[in-house]
Amino acid sequence: MTSEEVETPEEDGLELDGPRLRAVPATGKHAAQIQACFEGAPDYFARTEGKPVGADAAIQLLADAEVDDHRKVFVLVPRVGGAVGVLDLHLDYPEPRTAQIGLLLFREACQGLGYGKETTAAIEASLARAGYRALRLSVVDENTAAKMFWERLGFAIVGRLDRGVTVYEKILP
Ligand SMILES: CC(C)(COP(=O)(O)OP(=O)(O)OC[C@H]1O[C@@H](n2cnc3c(N)ncnc32)[C@H](O)[C@@H]1OP(=O)(O)O)[C@@H](O)C(=O)NCCC(=O)NCCS
Image (tube, rainbow, N blue to C red; front, side, top):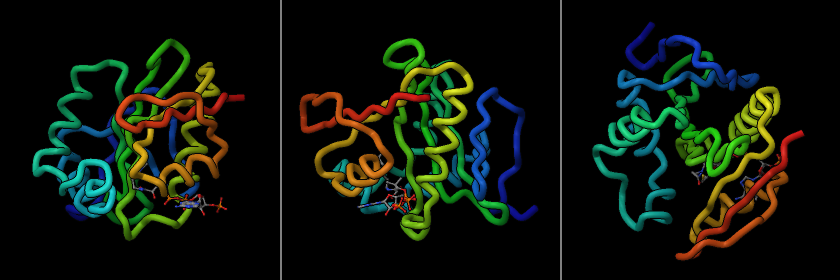
């Protein structure tokens, strides 16, 4: 295993592997790979935060998830090589049997390859098996590409929040 490759830690309950990507529950060991994914997606941070990602963003994400039993962070890893993406998933949020995608992000070099679709399908299938009713997420108005993506995947607008945020939801089978 090279330093770029990702070791699979213990099973955490949700099986989110897709045909091409494994979803590996993230630990502190993955901070550098998560940070590299963030820094590989500068357009997302420019659009949503108006500035480059902070140097400690990955460590902060992992620290926040660490103290929240309902929050699961995964690194998304192809068969060979290091992480190409990150998933931040909130279970039973904002209500029981609803899950919310806090962030699904791929390095720009790995966008448009079907990884988002594959990962979302795996999330939906796994949540449905676990008895979840719905999958939800929020997108800021500046992130028009993400809105097109979620709408393409069948998510419907269910609300608007302050500061130009649209809430999307998909009812699970
Ligand atoms: C948004 C994101 C997760 C989508 O993942 P992706 O791997 O690039 O998207 P996919 O290649 O799986 O696209 C799936 C489908 O959506 C469509 N799609 C994706 N982006 C689109 C866009 N900007 N406009 C129109 N359609 C789009 C694709 O054409 C594809 O359609 P198909 O089913 O006909 O093949 C990814 O681009 C990303 O990481 N963006 C930066 C972070 C971000 O904005 N995350 C979302 C906020 S939570």
